[in-house]
Image (tube, rainbow, N blue to C red; front, side):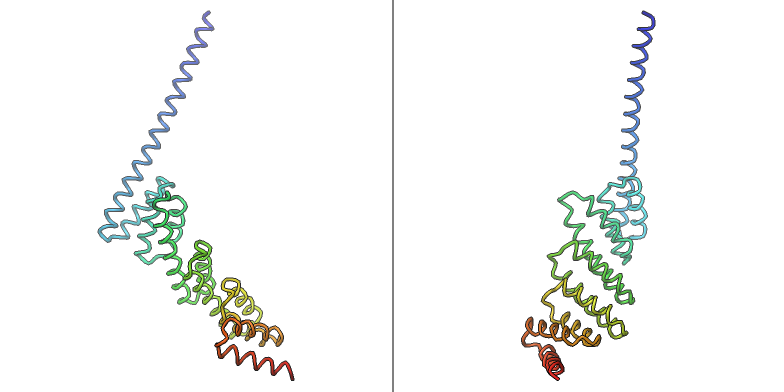
Length: 237
């Protein structure tokens, strides 16, 4: 009988300890959330005053206290956008977009796209062509229906192809022009660039094919017509 009484007491004590552990865990979680909310509110106060460096510090703390705090990531991204620091804005906005509920997802989406476009432009101006194109590729993957993403990526690939071609790396230039054609199959400029690169590589037949495609896309394009005629004449000799 004594052993049975002790057994039941032990069970009750164990259940009480388990309940206490759950309560403490819940309180701890609430404490983290309260702390992150407090940091977020401090960040918002500085953000609304235009004190973006101070705001960023508090938003960073809020995200560390609560890694699932979508709004903290959103405003952290906005803050770094205002500071012109795209290398920090983009990761924060990526996370905000991933975590945001549907009703605010579009805001994070639009801000992320804008950050990617601006980061690409800045990288291009610094001569960092590959990283500029990587940002545009991410924008295009994020929104394949975006005409701006498509046009900007195509233009960047063509321009990089031309830069590489002028440096003498013909095969790499051909690769970039073909990449541009994959993005925009109806780009006259991409086919003209490809034709020039193929011709420089000594492949007159393929260069003519590219020039013909350019002329078919835009029958009024004088450069395409001239190149096509020149290549046809060269091929007939």
